[in-house]
Length: 226
Image 1 (cartoon, rainbow, N blue to C red):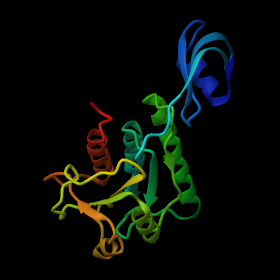
Image 2 (image 1 turned 45 degrees about the vertical axis):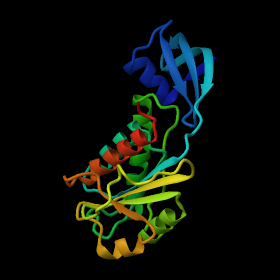
Image 3 (image 1 turned 135 degrees about the horizontal axis):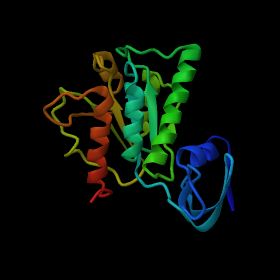
Image 4 (image 1 turned 45 degrees about the horizontal axis):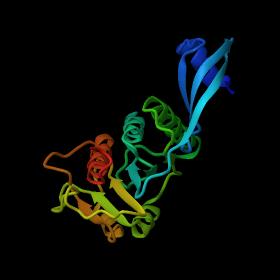
């Protein structure tokens, strides 16, 4: 048996209005999942009978998107779509030209909102794994992450190389860096010297959609989408 209570039980009982016999997919957020059937509903507590269990291993290479802080609610939009498209980790980045700033309690609340959005998007897309949303990273930390990656790419509109043609590894991490609304500064490009600057196409995309577009290209090239 699995018992859903608290927020999950309340959502299942009151929002989804699950009843006895209905089928439910339960995941632990780390790859484990169980096919269940509702046994009983008592208030905000839902008891499930487990019909089968499974595990989805993490795929290689691991996909990481470094997302510069966008303004407004575009950060949550980016996290939502990246999660649905199969990202393994999202790294919020305090870029030089980011309009939004995460400081003190405001930054802590914003980070929790990103993490909650990733959890909700994973459930919506039925992913057994919830992507990691890392702590806010400075430019130097992003450069170190790029240098350690099996492949590091910086999305830039002036790049001549296309992501669709760049060589991809079969293991390790692929790190994609997405700049803010004002673009990546020249100093940041120098700091990211170990990474390859690539472009997607002729159009300049918003910071909230560029990462998703790049991730879709990589997923397709890795053969995960057929």
